[in-house]
Image (cartoon, rainbow, N blue to C red; front, side, top):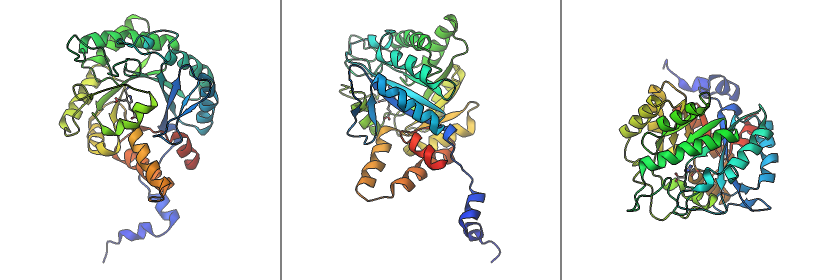
Amino acid sequence: MIERPRRLRSSPAMRRLVSETRLHPADLVLPMFVREGVSEPVAISSMPGVVQHTTESLRPAIAEAAAAGVGGIMLFGVPEHKDATGSGATDPNGILNVATRIAVAEAGDALVVQTDLCLDEFTDHGHCGVLDASGYVDNDATNQRYREMAVAQAEAGSQLLGLSGMMDGQVAEVRDELDAAGYANLALLGYAAKYASAFYGPFREAVQSSLEGDRRSYQLDPANRREGLREIDLDVAEGADIVMVKPAMSYLDVLADAAASSPVPVWAYQVSGEYAMIEAAAANGWIDRRRAIEESVVSIRRAGADAVLTYWAVELAGWIR
Ligand code: PBG
């Protein structure tokens, strides 16, 4: 036998030396929830270990993420009052914009403060956009709201806007608005290939979404791989500076395709349900928690993600160091 692949697996030092994929804290982004009108952080039962922060508890949590060396945070707002157009999203005193100002002041140059640019956290019907008379999500009217939301987030100091609403043309519309408002240098993260996934389940609790029905008229069908690439291409053509594949673990083929063809960085979002599954199995003693977390994120990086949004970002960064 000439070929003996096991030679390179023979010791921990040898395995470390030949490892093809490494994790680094700078390639991790921590999603964070900030809730309006609460005086203490609120636990999210379906995401053990994750909380809805108050504007006060947000500060030390950002300092902790910065100390761990994570590359960025992604902020989500949980407003006290929701309405049909999601007016809290464009109010300078709305929770997400308030939290962004606090986060930018706290973070300094240590990490990139990013904001979710989508209406679902702010609408009473729970959809990512505004509805027409028949109850259908109105693409072009929603893009108008995204334009306004983008300027509000830019004014609050957000350093990267995460366009997660899946409206057609959203990247081009927001880019146009920001350029006209003097924010030509503000970068856009396009959630290009975002699938209509059951794995967002716990997130609905995290942002107290009242959604009835589903998002299948705007998010992608899990069955479609080619369409994911089409969305990546469109977002790049519209000016996205980074594109996203979401969720991560069930879409590693789409991620690998995107990584092979995209001229801009490709990120992946390890979503709430992916987090909850591993936490639940580990809590039952059915899997080794740390190994499962590390393996899941290494796999996402191996498939081609340049950076990973994960609720374990801070803990994982601590292990990597
Ligand atoms: C939309 C948005 C969602 C998530 C992130 N941004 C929910 C959805 O599209 O249904 C889900 C993230 C997660 O599940 O961790 N604002």
